[in-house]
Length: 264
Image (cartoon, rainbow, N blue to C red):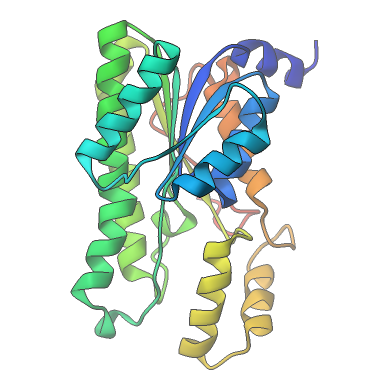
């Protein structure tokens, strides 16, 4: 049996929630999990996007609207999944946002927006999933999407970077609390990933640095030892691994998926 076959055997029949699942990294994760036999509930702030993505994955998958910054919205969405499936085994807390600005020009609104989605969203979804796993004695798995900016402070992204550093601290603390119950909690730290978020950041950065978008992208590639822009699928493969029994002795980790941009 190949490594891929073993992972598929581990995951076959599992049930997963993927937040921010309508596009980008979240959709790539949902698609990769589904290809390994996982039933996926894709949530997003856009119900239309979530349901379209779920339909694209095929029969048995669910798309639903969840605002990860709102406790009632998260609770209602997770309850809908429990009612439909009887429970779930995996949580991928992937929903995230960014804005870009010089630190001296940051507004309260930018700070709050990044922390509400990136940090509060992880807190709420992780907390409710943890309660579910403990109540059902399910040795579930949580994977949080952090960032390269959670390892190295990123110029023009200080507020975003702070929110993602918080995700790693939370991940480590929660992993220690839940380890005695066999529940694993890890994070992935992507680098320069080709998504809609990156496209917006390239435009912002080009304006703030006085460069063309092409020069910004060239700079990203020049910082990446593997010599290309990262794809959502590069991240999804690592998430699938972390969800599988192949990673059974890994918890509290922030796994770099950066093409070598950061090697610490």
